[in-house]
Length: 256
Image (cartoon, rainbow, N blue to C red):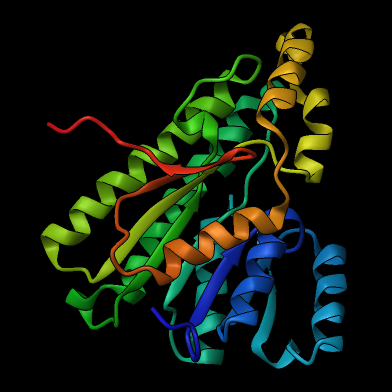
């Protein structure tokens, strides 16, 4: 998929991985609706984009992904402004074992809600033009990590949901590819604050730090480049792409 003229929606777009995804999509010719609850950070990013002469192809919409009403309104505003949606990056996420219900709500339920809403607008069977959805999972969606069992569960859910929806899309003729990105530790505020959110599992932090040292820490741009690959490579559907400091690989799941 060539990105020139394509319309993308990115959740959790103001900082970290979401910011890097927004920037790389814009650099490659897409127009992007930035959804985020962090208004100051989003406005700062919009100022940066204005300085790069890219603000005309970017629209910030304040949106809490836990609210279906706000997600629906954001999609509607995007379509009113740009005409359609071709790409969705469900990226918003948190690490918080002390509030596991919120972790499930943001990391998994919002991905499902966003995907189903995108299907309403993108599905070729109902008048849409097709497109691609990339869901941000994590290496913990493939390899369980001690210290964050609920986070691990949500990311396993994202990978499973993405793969199942990709099969459904192919079987039903939706014309939509769905893939999951599974990065290892990324240098973001999420990683910096994760040790404060482990709750009863905080004694395992030292072991977790040792794992980080072995795997290496990615930059947000490393992840964004992998997202770009999944968006543009039309042969990729139902894939889970793991990215670590030592390289990346597509997960070979057992066949039925």
